[in-house]
Image (cartoon, rainbow, N blue to C red):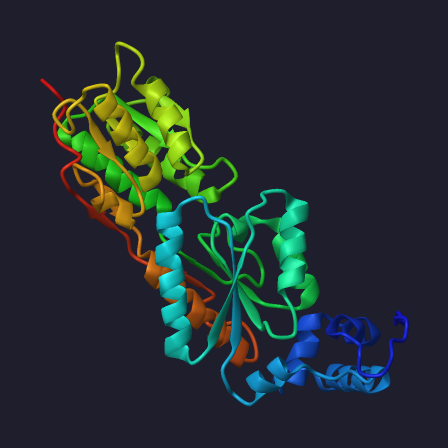
Length: 347
């Protein structure tokens, strides 16, 4: 076994114990918390390492072992204030209902190094688990830091399940398919599409749903005007201006979130276009913004607050059990909400 440099008594970390015992930090955590799914010889090795290094389990671990309230961290970085507001409300409510506590930490730098630093400094003895909403749910740098610390996490809208992952999501592909079918059923055949951030799997899934619905109708996605966005209002402005600049403009625009759809509505108003008589515009998320603009936005409602509450419950289940929950991934239902921003194409 590797031998870590001896620290002064009582200052050893869970990683030191894991290295000394030749196991993962998660296994050490299970032994400390009295988990049953640990082999006897492994448990003995961990206990020996704990004794040798004078490791003192933190008060948070003892709290969990006693079945008391867990401290859950929420590390977030999301360009949509409307999305984030609903998510935070749901997470706080979930923590309250479960008797736990929620600690918040923003991370507004998109560089992997900065994200790793934020995760490393956030995770300490008072944090037993972390919730990662997008885009941090797909940050390999953040997840690597959490793995190294032996801290479990639950991701929101993780595109592909990973070993040991917990995930809460909707069917982004199916939702985008449903929205595009709605526009096609209204009679639209020239549909502009504004993509979401290229580094997020949800963006790709929504675009795939758009393309598959077109294929069902015998149309090719390459015949449609598609612009890149980044889930921000400003990127929606730029994309909508490009979509509506030409003479053969689309009769409908499907934006990958409500922020970009609202931006497209603003551009259309500035150009003197009437919605939905001249142009239909639809979005995705059904945040508060969708009903704060005129006309109100046809959109996909994903249960953002409920996703956050479900993430808290899933993480609590993971923390209080001996292993992974029976259902490590929870797929919640979406809803197509038709409002005043979509209608038939102009004659």
